[in-house]
Structures are given as C-alpha cells and as structure tokens.
Length: 242
Ligand SMILES: C[S@@+](CC[C@H](N)C(=O)[O-])C[C@H]1O[C@@H](n2cnc3c(N)ncnc32)[C@H](O)[C@@H]1O
Image 1 (cartoon, rainbow, N blue to C red):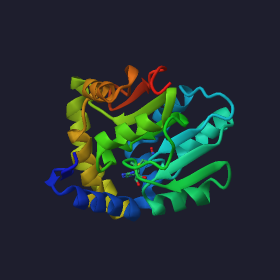
Image 2: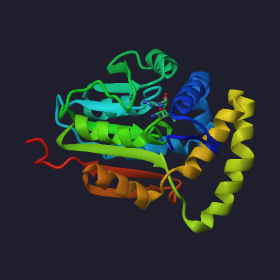
Image 3: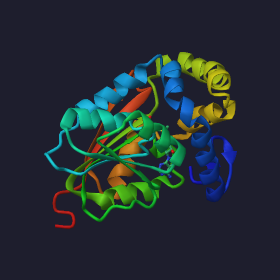
C-alpha cells in the first residue's frame, strides 16, 4: 500500500500528498457522501463499534484518523470519557470542531508518528483510517506502542464481502460511487481512489494476521453487512512492558 494510490504506483511521499489532498478537498461533504453512498448504513456500523466499547472512568481514549469526530463523539456520549481525535487533516478536524463544540480534544497527528507516550492509551479506535495511512505497518507499531498493556484496539474498515454479494457490490462500487462523488462532492477521483483502495486492502483474515504479527493478542473480527465492512478487535498483552 505504501507505494500505491488506488491502482496508481506512486512513491510514499506522493501517496501522502495525494491522500492529504483527497481529505482536504472532500472535508465539507465527507459525512453527506458517507450517508449517500451507504444509504446511512455506515452509521449502524459505527454504532456497532461504539457498543463494543467499555472504558473505565478517566481512561484515555483516542480515535485515530477520527476525521470529523462522529465516532469519538458517540464514544464520549456512551462512556462520559474525554476522547482525543487524532487526524492528519486540518480540514477534516476543522469541520468536526465546528460540529462538536465540546467534550472532544483534537490533535493534528499522523498515525505513523503518534504524539502519545508509550503505554498511555486504554482504547484506540480507528475507523476507515488504516487503509488511508501512508505506512499501515508503521501505524500498527505506533498503536501498539501507545496502548497500555491490556489496552484495546478496535479497527473498523471496509473488507471482503461474501461471494454472492460481490457482483452487486462491484457494480454499485464501480458504476455508482464515482458518479455520486462527481455529482455531490465534485471529486470523482477521490471516490475512484476509495473504490480502488478498498480492493487492495487485506481481507478479514489477512488483517487479523497483521495484528498478530505486530504483537497483539485476542485478535478477532466481526463482519458487518456480510463483510462489506468488518470490525477487528485486538488487545495488547498484559505482560507487555510491565
Ligand atoms: C475515510 S476518513 C475516516 C474518518 C472517520 N474515522 C470516519 O470513520 O468517518 C479517513 C481519515 O484518515 C485521515 N488520515 C489519512 N492519512 C492519515 C495519517 N497518515 N494519519 C492520520 N490520519 C490520516 C484523513 O485525514 C481522514 O480524516
């Protein structure tokens, strides 16, 4: 993934720049596009993520690549904890800041270089962000470093749907989504990138293996809408760093 932008071969520096441009250009219409593209179903996927969250009072929670803050706001609403939204895009954060006036903390940060101390975070959520990192492996190492022993990592991403759904899903993805992106967000290329990047992303089991390789334990996943998205859960081992 480091050397591609969708189906295009690029250098990591170019990838970073292109992805940054994508989110700067769609920030204002990002949430509207999500509602239109998924018929609002992305909200239920995010609700499933939030339902699975359990946090002790005062625990530090980070929503990485948190964008406009909807997942972080829902976690705050459920648990009462402060949640830090960390995202590389100033533009996405600005849209979120206007929408969620209080309770959240915002930090411009890259997943590959997180501004949190070792073993300091109880919960890190990452929704539709891992696929967009310049360096996914480095990001996973960073997440592992920042989490406390026994800390939880929850990743929500597009994944590989069951075989019978694929023809419909592919038709909808390639024929409809870029047109919606052109019409609503006026950024067809951003949505072409979305479709291509989903196809290049590891499937459910491959992603589990990546988490295990980083050192996580208790790695498991739950398919959402027949695998269009998947929630992956992982825990940093208790004895790590103790
Ligand atoms: C598809 S959006 C997801 C936003 C939100 N989490 C959601 O579920 O709607 C991807 C987010 O990843 C952020 N992002 C891209 N590359 C990043 C990086 N290297 N580090 C941190 N955030 C990054 C983008 O700015 C964007 O806000």
